[in-house]
Length: 477
Image (cartoon, rainbow, N blue to C red):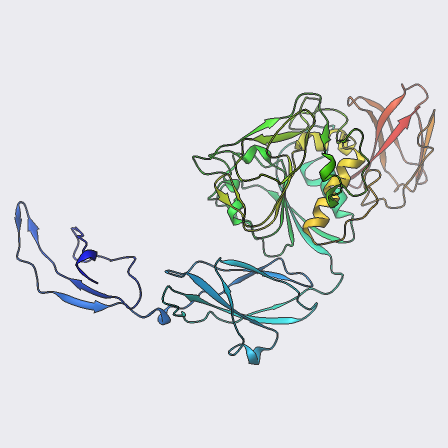
C-alpha cells in the first residue's frame, strides 16, 4: 500500500501467489527478469485491489454437547477475523434482525435455553475495520428434552488383558456407567490410535478418555483428533502420562507422568476440597480415600501399579483436588476450567483428570476397585454432564445382566447362596491374588458356594453367562 510495505518475491515460475494481504487493499507490482548475473528493466507497474471483506463467506458452525438448557457452537477461524458475530434465535423470521452476540473465540456455549425447542443460528466474521463477512448458512438445532440421559462417549484402546482381569470391552468403570439409567454410554474401542484416527465428538455430552490409551499415542498429540486443544465436549481424562512434551504437549513444555509410590492405594484430599461435589457420599479416613486393594500390571495381572500423576505441569494451579498420599504432583485428580492453558495447550472445554492405572481398574475383574473409587467415577461424570451428584455412595460392583441377583449371607463364615442366576451360568471364586478357589455351574437358577476351608478375607465372585461377566465381592470371616 506504500513504500514501507514493499516486498521482493523471487520465483522460477510464471506466476506466484501473494498471501496475507488485507481485504480492500490496493497493491502495486512490477516484474523484473534475471538471467545469470543480468537483470532486466522493470516492467510497467500494475495495480489491483483485493476484494472487500464482505465477499468472504463464513463456514457453517458445528454443534456439540446439546442438552436441555444449552449447546456448544464451534466454527473454523476465518482469515483476518478479529471477532465473530453469532446470530441466534428461536424464531427463524427474526434471524436477520436479531442483535448478534460478539465472540472473540471460535467456540461459545449458549445457555439458559428452553428444553425441546428448535433454535436457528448464523455466523459472520468481523475484521479489524469492523466489516462483516457474508453470513454462514443457517444451522438448526433442537435442545434435548428435560430428563434426557447424558450421552457419554467412552474411548478406550483395544488390548489383550490378563485372564484374571476384565476385558477392555467390559471394564468395571464402563459397566458402572452403563448400568446408570441417567447415562447413555457408547463404548468406542479404538483400533487406530494415530493422529489421523477418526473421532466424532458431536453425539456426546461427555467424553471419557481411558488410561488404556497410550500416553504417546498420536491421537492424543496436538495434531491428534483427541488433542487437548481439540476437545469440544467436557472430558474426563484418565491419562496423566500424556502430560509431557512430544505427547499431549508440543515441544518446549515441561511436565512428565509418574507412578505413585509402590503400595500407595489412597488419595489424599485436603480438608478445603472435601466439600467438592466430586467427593459427595464419601467418608474420609485421615483425609484419605482408598481406591484399590492391590497393585497390578498394565494388563491387570498381579503387579505394582495403581495410582499415577504428572509433575511440573504449568497452568494447572488451583485445580488439584486429590493426589496420591505422600506425593506432591501438579496433576492427578484435577478440575480444569475451559480457557486455561495446560502446558502449552489451550483447552476449550472443562477437563477433569484422573490418575488411575487401567490394569489396576480391571484387576480381579473389578473387585480391586473400592466403592469409593467407583463413586469418584460416577460423581465426575455427573458433574461434567450437568447432573446433580447423589449424596449416597456406590456400593458393590454393578451388574448389568443380573439386576435381580441375590448373594447371601455376605459376609459369611462358610456357605454363600446365590439366587437369580441364569441357567447354565458358570460361577468362579478367586482370591485377591488371583487363585481360583471354586468353580461350579448353576442348577435351577441357584447355587451354594462352600468357602469353609478358605482363609478369612476378601474374595471375588465371578458369574459368566452367555458371554457376559458379572462380578461381586464376598467377605469370608
